[in-house]
Length: 304
Ligand code: BEZ
Ligand code: FE
Image (tube, rainbow, N blue to C red):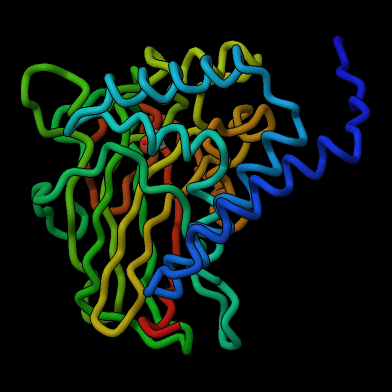
């Protein structure tokens, strides 16, 4: 491994660098919006500290600009390379952690995790016990649970959006035939209970054919995400929850999720059921193996 010893910086050079930083910081002094002023000055301070700490070369500065330019070029209304960059740097998860505290004094709320780029508005509605697969291939999986608030009260009518990749690791929107599959929404019943059929989640890579994928390759990191099923849950007066559940025993959890989305509380046991095991709703699975899992969801109050 090549290491770069910290160069000795003369007091004169340090003074030159500090003076520039101070001048740039002062350039924001007249910003009327105090929050904008705080953001711009902190960004400037951290950016200059980074440049000075690593002693950035001009060639490296150029490489950085080329990287950002490529991220811009590949970004359109379907592909968002900057969000992907934020995801693989853990910046998305850190922002989620800051803004979605699970522990607010009462029972803990269900933890949040990354949104990802594959949510689609207006996915079909299914009844309780319906199937989100819509023709997507994979092992059937029965998912059930309740939606409550942090005082344990059920939240009847909570809206539950679910979406996932098929067994080949692709979301419907990654195919070119306009299919709608592996996604749906449903509403919790009068006791806050819900249940649906989905597919047992399998690992898949984040889009890695662009600059973020190149960067991951250069640093020896895998683009693969731990197997998961996405949820977005909304109920009046409650904070919207964007989360996933992960599959206990999935080796990718140990290897590492490429966007740092795994939280212990979201890792669920997916119980494998032998062929012929009766299903909760009497569905005939033609002797296939299937799984079942439980995910009880607690929503935090909207104002916390
Ligand atoms: C996903 O889980 O769908 C996802 C999340 C972050 C980046 C790319 C994909
Ligand atoms: Fe996903």
